[in-house]
Image (cartoon, rainbow, N blue to C red; front, side, top):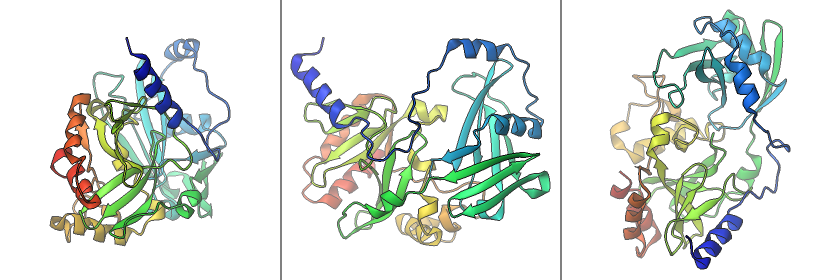
Length: 339
């Protein structure tokens, strides 16, 4: 049983890091999920996953007439129960492709809920296969397919861009990240320590509560995402130091922000230069945005944090506590101990 002191600390942290939005970007009504829906969905005849147009028709017909794409790399995720198997996928409105009228469409068995994996269905949708995507404004598009029309809005991080954090002179702000977990980050590069930082963005509140795993409140873990943060007291910020390995293996929404880089708000060519500074072995191997030249469907994964299976593994960040200079702290946290 927790002591009164422990309970107070947990309550204090919950209040301190609770969801307090100063600007609404989510639905104003909580969605309640009912078991009745699951049961009824499980009795329906499934769709043939090999029939791309049929699956696309299913997704678009149940999509709201206007959607908001929050994740920074342009993913709009969906899932459905099909013949007793959970299927998940996404429509991706990629920064480099959407102005060309192209949308990526992918779906597959959800390995988190379906033990056996299967085929991944991946398509590039465009006018030649009946799909049109027309730009209305920098962050608004019209998606059409067989008489179905949907307005697509890309999250515009104007607030984050106008409220950039104050950084040491050797750190560079790359852009704001809206992760598919709902957690927001500042994406930063430390030129002195030669490391990337994912810094928790608190300006618009938090999408979860946090708990401390140590008496000094140095290490905090999200109760929903299990993202682990180290409290950098000098700059009063939370640095992402760990992501739960099981969630990475499951490829779910809590597998880390490496796949939600701020493409819409950074210069792809400049980012490639930063990657080459970070890892000189990449020189000549990348296109802008970190896309591999010899594997254009993949891009360099920026993962400075550790993958942890047990919370005790996070205590090794304590060796960084007494570092005399800030860049040394970053070197320590995102050097050997994060591997």
